[in-house]
Length: 273
Image (cartoon, rainbow, N blue to C red; front, side, top):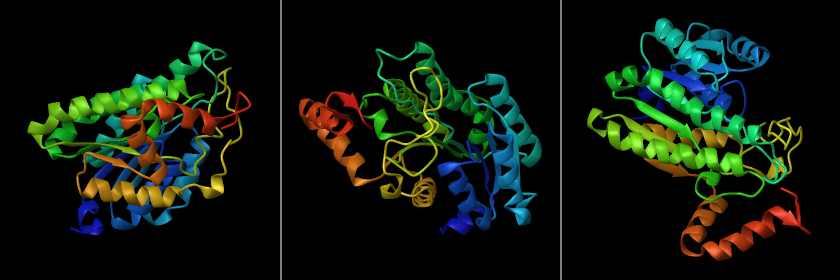
């Protein structure tokens, strides 16, 4: 089955769709005839997304919502069901990162990251679950290589993605009798605003990226792989050679990986990436 046939009759709810990977997924799905509901915290970006798709006004539904707030997640899912009558696929894409050494970070930084990356997925999946079971649909989580290997300066981010992976594996087993697919995807470093918006030790956006964004996988390429994985009803997907290599090395040679990770992220004892 090609993508047009698969997605044309589907209702897809995607969190964090106003930017980065989420927006790229929406841009790929709209020409395929899918009905899409998305949410984000920035109403201006949501308005721009709506304006940039004038031919899909009836199939694109945007709601301002913060996924760390349970009541706003409930509202997002309830309004999507009112608008489209069902949800076939939920893509838990909304996420936030951090860049701060644990010794300097306020614990509220880690709590904020956990609330968005982990609890946001839990809340939205909880409210959408009955419809997804009825449709024998799919729940997707956008995870990270940091969900397989803890990364320095990103302890809260790694914790949130480890939690996401474990939780999704658990519910995958629970939901298997209902023919619901649960898929978690680890894109690796991808061009997006997530590093600019990453929280520093004071829970403020750092406002810059420590990486060479031009050398990273594009959001569009990442989105293409994600849609292919959904159609194939895969279990997991790890993108990028560096990510696959890191996971492989960490399984077989964890002490060596500690040293390699340290060398990659630090210079003269200072966190540089």
